[in-house]
Length: 182
Ligand code: FE
Ligand code: ZN
Ligand code: FE
Image 1: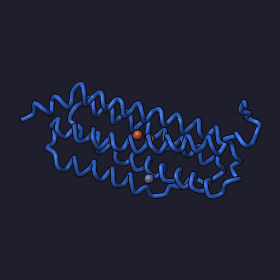
Image 2: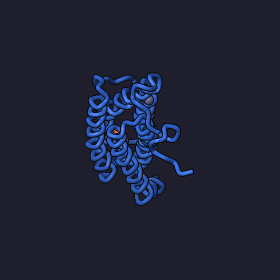
Image 3: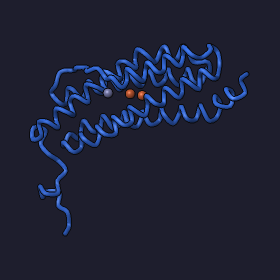
Image 4: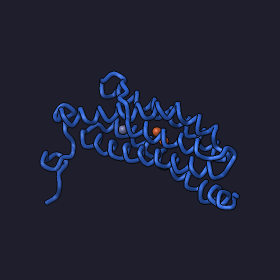
């Protein structure tokens, strides 16, 4: 039998008010990632300053600009949901950022080894964001919030590109330089 989009049995869309618990979970998760993006806006300049290679510093600087856009996009999501903009502390991002800062503290300034550490820490951050935006984009679609899914999907794509860029910097340059470091 052919699946019909009008047959409620096969429909993946539900009314936003149909699943209050799921909608609440979704909204809480948006508040969590909104906190996380705003935390990164504070942390990324420190990482950029600590980076040794100009290429890595520039990549972090570029992603800072994107991160500001990610926070703005989430504000648009709140608006689309008819909810007030609100942040809810993300324990995961707080921990990931702390880990990044402690790597900086435990490595020598001006070394490629420090850059390797910054890239490792940054990629953990990007993977957390990719997991979050991937899951929330899908959930938005399930809830029938296509315009919200579109915004979250844009950010998902940018987080993936940021992660790939870090991999390239590590593989093509920083890892080898660090391996040759005394
Ligand atoms: Fe982001
Ligand atoms: Zn979180
Ligand atoms: Fe990011």
